[in-house]
Image (cartoon, rainbow, N blue to C red; front, side, top):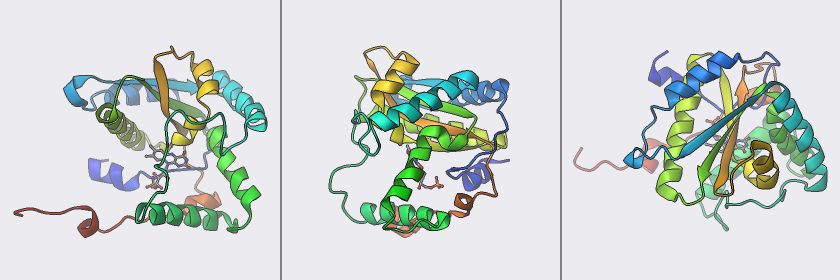
Length: 225
Ligand SMILES: Cc1cc2nc3c(=O)[nH]c(=O)nc-3n(C[C@H](O)[C@H](O)[C@H](O)COP(=O)(O)O)c2cc1C
């Protein structure tokens, strides 16, 4: 698989087979992903891979926690996942992907409880057998947070090379206390996002979801070219 194929075949997968991911595979992927660039070579990230009984325990904890502190508020996010009053075209793009996802699942727009039930599947990692969290020192700012994205995309592309799929999940920002306790994060470190990892369940309705991209002319300008 070359880079273009890895990029073209990566998409957010939200239904997984129970098939386990061998520990050596995720170790290999993370080892290689650590070559991701970062400003000043700060490498301002920390990754936490969670599987096996520990993952079962986290999924059980989240089932309870979501009854006490239900989504979408959860425990209160430590950072704003989206700006308030998201303007067009961002708001439209967000709306479009949400509508397409619920349409693929056959959930009508006005069925709020069903939408929330599906959203809650995030906190079971969509049944993925492996999870990843990315944390960062609180003192880091936007440039270092952008470095985290480079690392995570590198992970997601390398997973494709291993025949694996993933879904990045910033929804975990809603449960900073539970995840902080679970990962035993020091005071100075905070959670950026989670990631579900495993082998896609191609038979699941949500697998039909196709996400669009704005055309190149809308997102890029060419100067002197
Ligand atoms: C940092 C980040 C966080 C995301 N968080 C979530 C999430 O919490 N739940 C979810 O279902 N999808 C999440 N996504 C997936 C996006 O919705 C998805 O990338 C986007 O709609 C484009 O679709 P594609 O990844 O299939 O190309 C996240 C993606 C990124 C990059």
